[in-house]
Image (cartoon, rainbow, N blue to C red; front, side, top):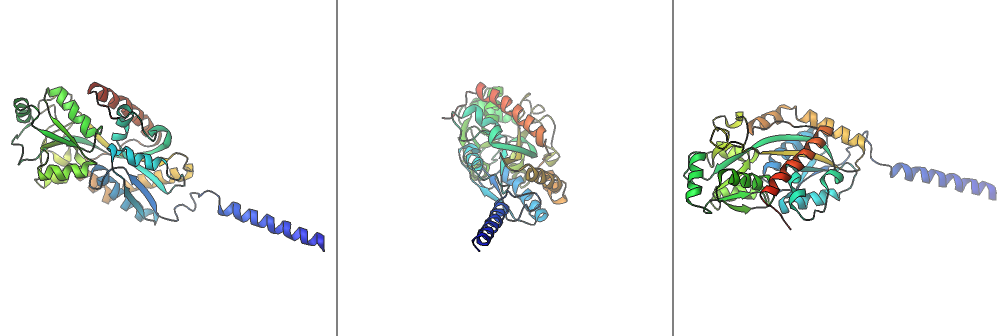
Length: 328
């Protein structure tokens, strides 16, 4: 009797152990996703990252049958939200939607709470757009880049330009422009391109070196005036806007781009499945029309994205060093 009891207890223990092992085993691509997914956007709502992340999230929601939620955590030039994302669970239910700004941060911040290349694993650069020089027509009467430069030289320190934060590509594009044109402009940082755009529209700042993704709709609405694209080629989204070289400032080129990263340690099969779903979403008609309206192109993916990120860290680092941009 005692022997049978021990055998029964051993059998029950074995069954319980097997149940626990099954119930606590990592999520797999076969079961993923079975609950909502979060995209951490480290900028305030309404900026360039939002302009691409939200349509992408909506398309992925349709494809996956689970909600893909945008969680905006703006501040510190996008580094605050990046730090939050880096500490998220590695279970495939949190992804990071970063931007070009995060390849600038390593060169200008004395200390970061994350490492872009170690704490995240690249999936895809979902959109690339050129920066554009835009002005509030009620504050700046210039009709061309030449006129803007002439006014700036005649009135040093009078014109203000906004950015999505200290050390962002908007900021460094402005510093690059100042160096190339030998002008003195006042930099005003914000907690994202969204708040910056609101103040540009409201006349609290005069101009911006904004990503075309967040400026395109305001340009088409006639609320801000584009003077030049910081690109080698014109964009079909604003075909009548000249490149900086055409407008008289050779070498002024800067692109804003937005990418999706997995949290380092996320199961490979889930990363691969998300990569496939993103690739599929980017081919959807709904995405294509939004991207075209904002002059966006799709960028490198996977290992190619990793190499691209490394090169961007190096290139923006040189610009930051040249402008002596440092943030404690």
